[in-house]
Image 1 (cartoon, rainbow, N blue to C red):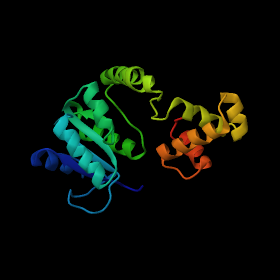
Image 2: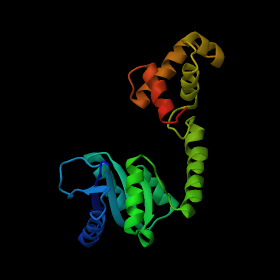
Image 3: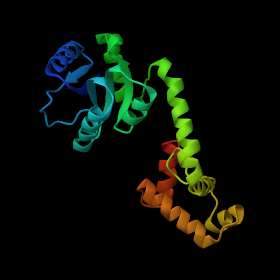
Image 4: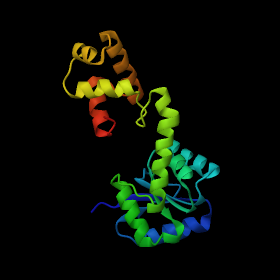
Length: 207
């Protein structure tokens, strides 16, 4: 079985050394030094909280090499977690629960694209997402996916096999408007053509 390449980021050297040493005991992981230039699949971030200074550090990690992050944190709430997810955090483990076995489990799951959040935070996080949708995105015509509502509608109809004229009739738009909406969606998703836009949106669960 191919080992997961992982590195450890910590706000203090003792935490970093301790976690790295524990993870090296696992045959499922290949723990790389922090100065390594080789790309990693998962970064384990060991911090006290997920507030401003830590969030900025995580952004720098993503800027240097975008990757999935397992956050090992002493103190976190739903608002902090929402900000952390923008920096690649896919799993959260409280430091009080961070046994070697639990960390290995979280890291290998993260490498497969599977996230995990403490159960007591999940409800609060969903409420926060709902508030953002209702009070920020919704009034501006956007869904939680970041696409405008009419962009989602056009992409769904394309996925169902409708051409531009049919979409225009269904949505009561002009064909020019349909083309403009699709063009804006392609720019937002950073894709090359309508087929790529639909494939990306379906794969990412946007439509």
